[in-house]
Length: 229
Image 1 (cartoon, rainbow, N blue to C red):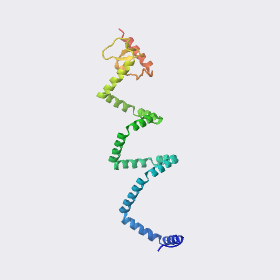
Image 2 (image 1 turned 90 degrees about the horizontal axis):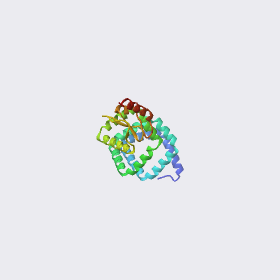
Image 3 (image 1 turned 180 degrees about the horizontal axis):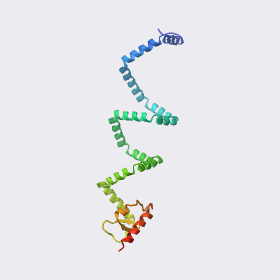
Image 4 (image 1 turned 180 degrees about the vertical axis):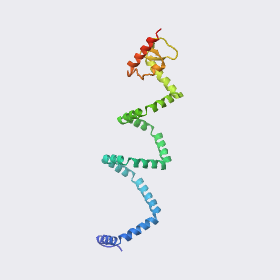
């Protein structure tokens, strides 16, 4: 029969606990050890049901927390970088099939949104700086990959399209005679000088931007003068 006086009941329970603390803890530990799997399964089921039932509430709380603890979260990620990386790796290994399935499904159903997000992200300074740093660090590797790709059918087709587009916009007035294996170098938007492929590729240049045009034009004119006869 419950106590009529709730305050007295709480006081008696507290006194009982203080008097039998070790005994109670020992009994609880023994119970947990005996029923560990059952308890964990029950808690797991409860957590799943609670999260499903309160999805929006928990999401709103998470958003609010993230807004008010930006610096704290950033600091935690920096200080625990390796731990978080390992946790993410272990989670991926354990849930690889599920993650890949979800990723493919999301990509299939959100093509427009993903393109728009990607377009906006690629314009940010963060993305531009990352690409610039990566290209500088891996210049030789990227150049080799491009050379290999350029030899493929798709690479050759892309190269032809780029050359055709460039030639449509440029004039083609030769200042010297063509010879076998010659490359047509545009000294400007109208005139070309036939030079060797090796010489043409010796300096990376761009007529549209003017990059290194003065240097490559000097070499082209020198070559033209030497081969006039």
